Image 1 (tube, rainbow, N blue to C red):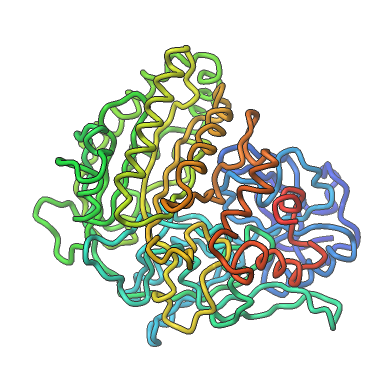
Image 2 (cartoon, rainbow, N blue to C red):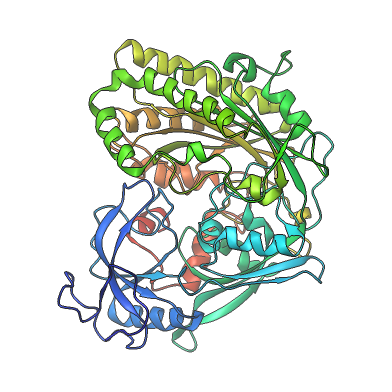
Length: 557
């Protein structure tokens, strides 16, 4: 019987209340309990999955060997802040699956500020907020981070997570930081891999100079990383300003247009985000600027998540709204206006339109309690000079299509369009010998296009269950893949969110899964640095596919 720690509400191994068969000959000293699994969008839900609690990395090695012998699969479980079926697939059989909770115990963080570069070493289940908090105590930080801090570092790295930090005109990166994905910060990692000679799994360290590391830097769940060492640079203060008075046609104007354009804000600040609610005229615009001294107009913050008004919509309201949205779509314009109104009023009521503080505290601005949505879209990799054109084209298309569907009484989108920027995974930012960029990072560079230095993340989000949503996302995704191609740009899916849509949902279109996505990581790349090299590496390190699921078997055959 499993012993030790168990999560509240869990059903331990051996308890008669368990509803699924006990795994045979499970390692007796590794805690195991039946627990719920619910992804963040609530599109993948299981009432009961056997879940082990890893106390150290060696537990995961033992679980891998046990799983191989007994025909089980091992899936890492972090904060479950995910959309895509990289951990579990909706509706799959979980009788031969064991999840591994990494966050409750496999979560240590250690900073070494003395080396060059300074580094932080973290277990798989450490949250990025815990890591950045530890770095901040040593005067260190990162340029980029996702906006939600409670996700695990291993989960973030598995999908090449990104932030919203992009250089202003003439701005250079702080040594030790990166304008690219978090995966570009990795200097070393330890993973569970198969040792053919020994006939068992083992822990193996990979350094950034090792050719074998590049597929593991964004592995989509086809390996199990137990710890990681990342570089860091000097922390800095940031000013974040919000505005809600720039009309979308002015903000998203074509290149060279006068006025308060996205292009002009990028040149001045670099760090720009716009959130445009459906059927409204003025987006919520945020800019971040490096600001060593506090501007007189700014309010200093001493911790993250300043926008409490965006965290205050409770989950039951989201669930109820999903039902309303699926049956009463005509409320969508009013709902869009109410969302914008809540933001505009919230900025005033909470005095958060002009903030100043440490970078971490202004990079983390969304809690996991924010409105639960599904997302379509992806990233466009192109030249810096194309930023305005790319965004102008997409927002023009989006407005035209939403207006068209509204004329038919259809409202497949009831939440905002969001755009933010970062740079590609530039190897010159890695302060050690590097074997190359992460094979499957959405912002990995194209060696044949060194001028493509910019990544433009564009997503449209909507409430789960909205009628017509999947068909709209399919139309949008196909348009983006076709439009942002050739000599102009390349389009890639955002692994953590929604992609490969058919009319019924995401992750389903066989042509997109089997053709379009692999091409994203073949075009312009040599055979040893893209899609096929990654799949070959996954098979070498895990030939028994212990670290996989049925969806990954189709995506990464």
